[in-house]
Length: 268
Image 1 (cartoon, one colour):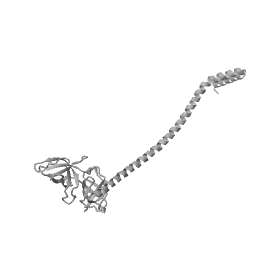
Image 2 (cartoon, helix red, strand yellow):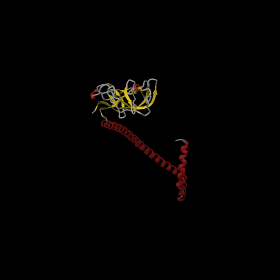
Image 3 (spheres, rainbow, N blue to C red):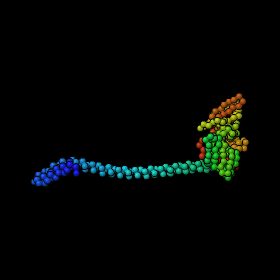
Image 4 (cartoon, rainbow, N blue to C red):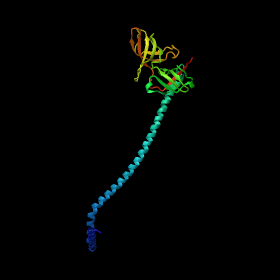
């Protein structure tokens, strides 16, 4: 034992012996003085113990909350997946309802199809649908949407088909302008790759009196497109020395297509 510790022990024993040999009143006074001296230390120790217990309890509570929050996050993720699936089903149901309404309203025998592929580099030229020869689809059949003409079948395969869009310059449509005697050939324009490509209507008369907003519809000439299908509306007219041309906005939003309809034949 170290000398200092030994001295402290001896002093404690001497003090204790002296205190125990005193009279009872003196012993009580010594006890009172002792407890007064160590009272603040005991109070601080008790307070620290209380705070330590509270801290441990809070720590356990935080871990429980963390576990509960983790479970809630998992449930929120599951609900988001369900919501996404529900929205997809709702959108699909809406498209099916539109397809049924279109079939009821049209005079054509049509096959409904979904867009399954569009390539960014040919976005305004072609697209692919999930219907082909197994559903009676052949080359050069009209493709429509609820809003108007989309294009025509370019290459049919067994269970899919490639569609040539009206915004492609190779897709040429014989059209007339409503409320006017004007007729011409409508096609896409080369090099137009913005979000809203326009169509060009050629071979109008030299003094074509057309106004923005007039509707452009198919004539039925050429045997590919049925007559009176809406194609677009006049934007502006450019008059030339021999004939006039017009810019036409497509009736169909070709950047956001879901369900289309391939015309097999005209019903009577």
